[in-house]
Amino acid sequence: MKKCCLLCLSILIFFLSWEIPAYSDVLSNDNWTVSIGNEHSWTGRNNTGNLSYYGCNRNCNCIYLTGGKITCRTGVCKTTWQNKNNTYILSSPITQTNARDQIPSTLTVSSDSKVILKTKLYPKAFDNINYQQ
Image 1 (spheres, rainbow, N blue to C red):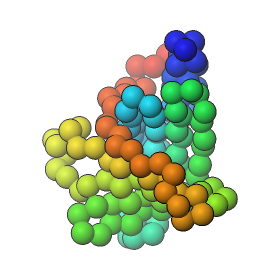
Image 2 (cartoon, one colour):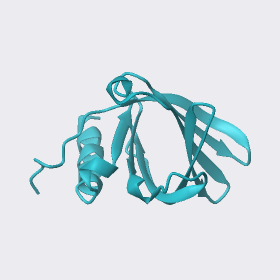
Image 3 (spheres, helix red, strand yellow):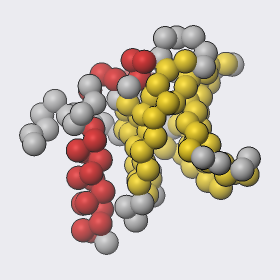
Image 4 (cartoon, rainbow, N blue to C red):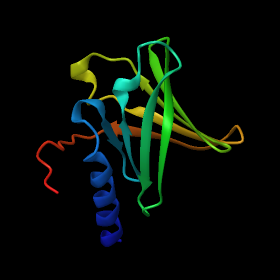
């Protein structure tokens, strides 16, 4: 099990090493680690952006998606990705910068409009400036 986790982490770090640190986020819990990248593609207008999603579960089942769009309403920003019949939505409350590290986002995955996963993810510190390949 530890080898699998190390492999997942290595793959995630590899993908993150290609992202610009100021424009990517890593969120996780005991079962999932998700990296959101290309956040600078969002113009501030609803339903815009081309955000990337790279997520792995604890068993190293991973998926990489692009084309994420952000829409913000009533204090919550939702980033949405489509993959065939599956929809991935990351809902994050709008907070002040210093509170951001403590407030979870909610990942909801639906298949054919039926929710198959709903979990809270917490911001994880990641510094790829000092990462050496």
